[in-house]
Image 1 (cartoon, rainbow, N blue to C red):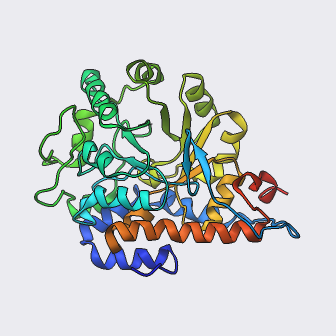
Image 2: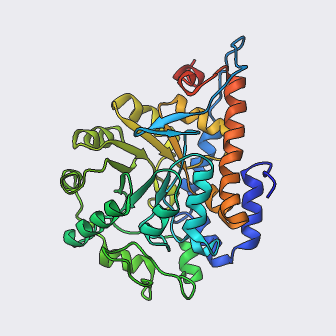
Image 3: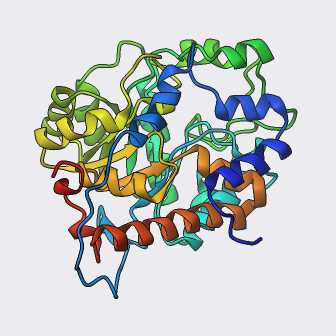
Length: 353
């Protein structure tokens, strides 16, 4: 497929191809979707105070995250149910992400077994984890993921219950026939269905009493680095690092959990000032300039969720690679125009001169 003009073009193609129930599941936020919109709008309010007369004739977007050499500071966020967008699902997604030279985070709610996804990958695969009420089942799942070859655990902590996504309620969201969740348990099992609804299933399985001791417990059962995803407060970020997390993901779950949660870019500076550790950010990345703003405020890399799904729906593996290619091209141009020949030159003075 030809390289799209921008991510918005990919989104339009994807919406035309994906059934309405699936599109609304991917696109929706919680309640009035204020946080969903604000994630993007907050980026638009930030100006870039570019430098001039800097030699940018040679540039690189490469970076290192958790020891992995990545072609750009953009990672595939964990998103659910990729086979609703494309028959090859997470296999196409991980292959397209590898073609782009970056890392892929596999969702617990994926349609494809972790073993198959890791086998298809050409780059690092991390696994996004929910902690169940049954800690033994969670530990067994971690063992499975580690044995499969995943290289990090991304612990999601902002979902003690599932946020109310009114579009899904209206549509009566259910997985299409033949699709299920392949990574909920220790063993590779056939489709896990949600006859009672996704929110009810979450309430039955996930542990709403989860507390800070979960990080130490998780570190005690795996040698993999543990990242904590769902942080919007500086004190929580400090606590996560203090409990032994390798880093944090500044995230409000794409605006899908607590509506009125802050835009992630708006809280990033405080978190970056509060901790010395890996910081990733998701929510609202739509342009290369957004990546520059996030890195300038202290993120080491950003995650993309919906844009990856747009690429997947638009063209499978090639579409996913195209989504990353758009952002890499825009990032390279934005860096040149900001006077940044490499990632190290993207510093706070670009957004706070």
